[in-house]
Image (cartoon, rainbow, N blue to C red; front, side):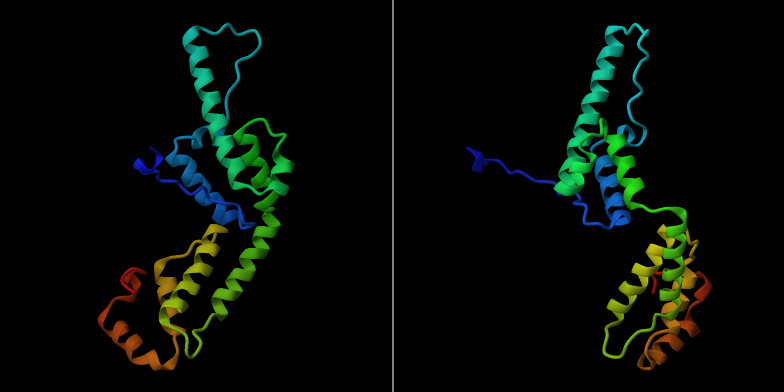
Length: 191
């Protein structure tokens, strides 16, 4: 009976318009299924004059099957309007590259986004009545986005930012940390 089986359904990362986040989740998902290399590099088709041995034919069919499975996962992750655009793509690599080109953005757009993130990071301050946890999460969200867009950011930069932008009621905590710890080697996990 079906009720006797314990099925664990893996959640396929669903594309919600945030390409950077989705692409990392989807890449990790495809890696876990061992389909990432096919998606990243594609299938090298033999030239028309090449005579394949039975072993090569079997290997090629195996790669095509992996590609079909990766393509199936990508189709499941994408909404119908986007799916209709990429439906004509032949391979998982074609789909991946198309999504990347359409949603990742150009270098100029990335630079503009990074500039906006830098401004957000610099002006970010903890607000009265907010929890330290939510402020920490917001700071990490912005710094992670900055790093994704190519910003080199050390832990010490983020730690110092958090410590100097907490509300005044945490001044005693900041002083205690600065007096007892070497901030230059203090990690985000320690904080």
